[in-house]
Length: 339
Image 1 (cartoon, helix red, strand yellow):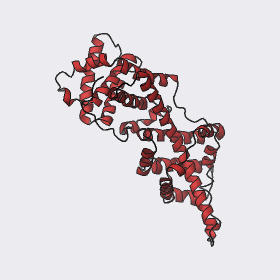
Image 2 (cartoon, rainbow, N blue to C red):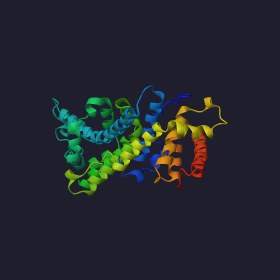
Image 3 (cartoon, rainbow, N blue to C red):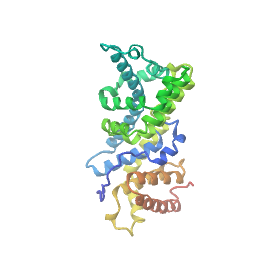
Image 4 (cartoon, rainbow, N blue to C red):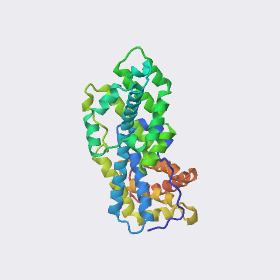
């Protein structure tokens, strides 16, 4: 096993702005390949700096990490239900005061009775997931939940919704789409809460948020909301296979891939090369060689972006140059034959 020369700290959020800007192209995939690549890099890094870890153990760690990320998708949907329930609780508490005001005795229940939330609450797929894995923001992050509800109530979107002269399902869906997109998902408070709840969650927050918006759209477009399907963990079996193959080939062929890296970094002092950069290049070479259907330019772009996230801008430029030279050598040797 190679020893870490420079071990950079992990960034708090591995979902890059580039990923956000291009999220639409990944919208139909729950655990998409951008996330998979970042997870494989993390697990490979851990494998190489940990003594006596087997490839099988690393593969199990990868699958567990991907599963935990999928749980965030459900937790973000549950957040909207918990916010609704908290408001219902507040209204009931005010109604039962010793001397409630007229407004407290007869509160506006529109937010509490939102049809999208009722549809989500009664959805078969959603209920089945939480039957096995119950989760509540009211239990795990009560302060965050109260603060987020206060923030929502102070928004113009909430006030306009509560005071609208009409009351239709379209407005119910649109309220939560707008609140989630513009208020909840971008909030630092959500990021902090997610970080405190799971080591696996924060890196996927921005991506999973796009899938929540997609799910709201699904409910909006389906007449039978109970039968709406939640987005699956994997788009198909190929994504799961991609994840395991990418990791396995990286770990099993580390010495071979290191030879290529060493060949094209011979003018660099080894102490100056961050070990994370080496790991990123190992995974990239694995994909270049063993994933013939993925264009070379796609692989290079993805791992250069990962370098910006895991390391530095200088690392991305360095990795770009080394991988470009390795691609030319692999083509020259006939190991890869793709654009």
